[in-house]
Length: 321
Image 1: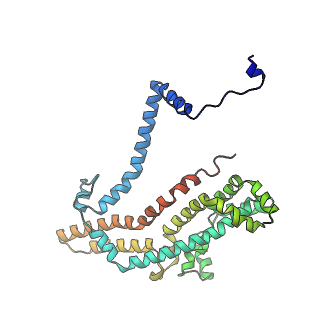
Image 2: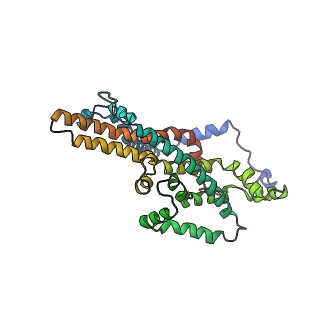
Image 3: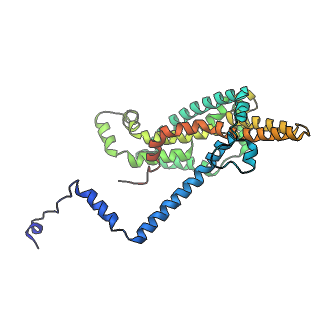
């Protein structure tokens, strides 16, 4: 045993210049089999990404292309026979702007209410000193597996005077239990309990601790859950279809469906003229692709701004220190 070892000394730490050298050396020591595995994995990942992105790209180029070329399979990578007839038909309908406005109002107010209810509830259920938290969480979880069904819900909303109002899009979905559980897990695993002890010493109540310490440290989970709620409200189709008959309160999804069905009906009753029917069919197909783009474009624009938070949020609860 050397003197250095007997005296309890430790091996010297590597300097910053030596670490990259060791990494390069590790890569150089990879065997041919390791390189083959890396290449196969990279190709599989590229293939999966292509399979996911290509359908979206095809819808985009098909919405700008001649539908005759689309139906014959000639449109694959770039748009051919550039046309804007579908978008012109969609945007010329005044109902779409009302649908956009309704959906924006429902989504913004609904998401704000969701966050105002979900985050405090998740924080309360994360506190170990809150004794009834397990039984309350059980009742929350119970609703994920058992529900009354469409007819009981319709009768309930009728008794509450929610039918044909904007509140039918907002109040019944004020809490999503899955998002509540995610937020609760985040508060339990990612917010150190020492912060609460320090807050108590400084005289902060639970409300002050939640607002001044927990919320500023929870930007990632707030962004992720907020995005989940935003998408949920934006894509809400069944609520407007079942519980709303007033056309002035219909969301964008119902309006786009009505535009699409109206053009398909016109195409079906266009007469027997071959050229007229072909043109109507092409316009209906172009409207079909355009409707998809119009309905998803706001989400595609919003997501890049929240991507950094989303990347952090997907790992919430995966690692505990």
